[in-house]
Length: 355
Image (tube, rainbow, N blue to C red; front, side, top):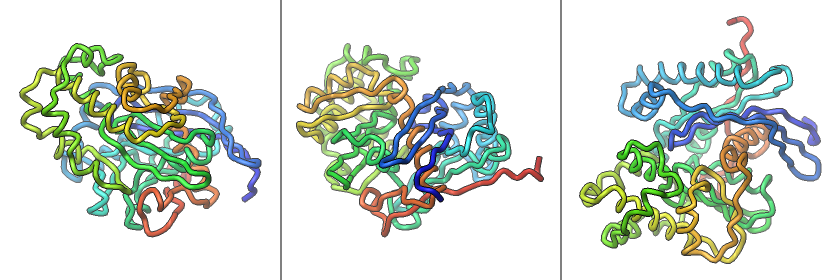
């Protein structure tokens, strides 16, 4: 395939914080280096039914999971059909799907949203299952975003994503290391939900609380933070290491939130040296969280545009799909700990005979 070619791509992402289904239409152009352009983007908020299905699916049996995998693929495909105006102008759909299980130590990960169903619903070549091959190669299957940080966001020393979990890419010329730092929106939203809020806007609830030093010390001493990596976090890790803390149940919600803001700010801030850090993800819009990061770091904070903040991960999964289509490396062993670099993802062609 030619090395100077332009691709029109739909990127799709559903994050652990269940904010909604992110869909982006973008283009990638390789000349001397990769460049991207965002054409349009949209977040489809989940209905109460889909929110419940996705947040509880890990508790269901295999039959229910398989059924939901197909149904979610159809849902993704139908939302893409509503989103795009001219299918013939789109080369590929690249979908991360929604993570139900992520247990790399057990060589298992599952992101639902069946790729074949998406392809047949839209009539467009679809790439998904970006994590599986790296898991088979004894890697963490995450993080996958660093290849995009390395090749698309070249001018920043650090790229920090504040999603369900906070993850960081650290670049050194042509090399990069990356890892999940700590839980972020996934725990902040969980606590805000207890007050019937979808999320804690600008940390308004957390600002009212008092930091509990006992809980803060306990959190900062969790063994995960001592590991150098490669390493990644998951819902399962959160349930085992955070949600089961008895002391957490005894605190006022605002005090728990205040403590987690301090914890997140400390864990992130101490990883950042005196360089520029490019911040995206829903947490970038939380001014209190940004204040806490600044408290522990002298790095120059650079927030992305609204489109970059909300859709950078969907953009990069679109980029991963382009690299897969070109049979080029899109998953870095130095980041995931796999035995070798790989070109991850499964390609699904549109089966005309089935429609």
